[in-house]
Length: 256
Image (tube, rainbow, N blue to C red; front, side, top):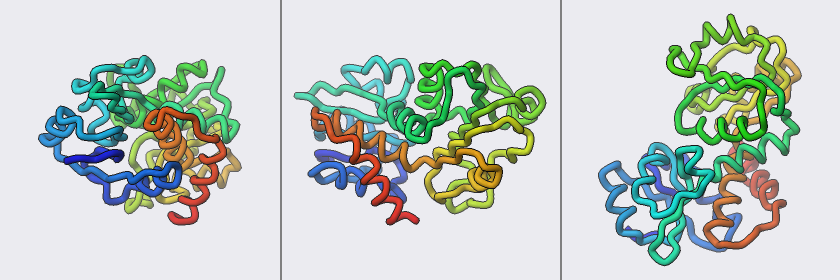
């Protein structure tokens, strides 16, 4: 399959990446749904100028790359691949998308105790940003405890003093909008909640945060911002940063 620009993933019917990219730049952006078996053929054929990569292939594509950007190497996941004369270089712009979200919403991380719900692919860039911003403590929470991860029960008992909570799990995503990864009642010191889900606009988790008067932010700005930074790698040129808010508002009106 030949594609100039596009998104590589397994299930993409609900993706807004095409609308976002085509609003940010003057090119056609394809949704490239491939099975795991077809990813190898696609990556080795190199019949594309640049692609983004989403679940479940952010680590799968790494063996096919010739160059791995230092940040992507540190994170251990790639969401942007650029083909320069047959040389494939991998980047991670999820990092910049999440950093933008924190800065845009004035969410303080330095010196704070942060809970991160989930430890899948989506968490990798989030954890890197939190580390680089010098969070005092980063607690990863999953249903069951394990190496470097605590359970929800342990979080309630030992980390009720956390000030920032970030959900990187899919719990609460459309269509299961009545689900929530955790009630916030155990965490009395929270100042901000970020849910990287963007559909629905206000998850049950964010609704509870809003009711408590906390900063409550969904994942739409991160989605658009990571695309904005990917476009700059695709085209090897800077874009005006105002485009992020402009396209975010456009997608917000479409989505909600």
